[in-house]
Image (cartoon, rainbow, N blue to C red):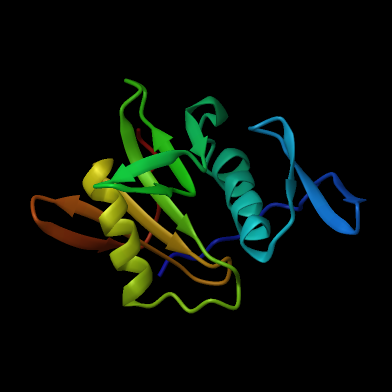
Length: 145
């Protein structure tokens, strides 16, 4: 497990039509503030502020095709060569990170192969590096990309 210390949030939040919205700095738009979105926004800030990943290299909720199914990944980080490098699946804090969550990100990885896979619910974060057909558990997110 990776210990994540989130930076102090400075989110812009508003209420509109009885729904809470949060401003996504990367997508430059207001998003419905769900429990999963809260985790995603905090994790993005961790990646940018703490890990110093380039915000321009982070894709958020883009559609991918899994056979005939259309799915959306949560976060996809690109390396300096603009190749997919790390995929992150975010869940709400009350969602357990089970084998099903790992299976979900592994399915997404079929369409978008990456070197690193991460699952988080904001309280717990697990990450793996792919080596051939194996997943090797890592205890820290990489710094070189």
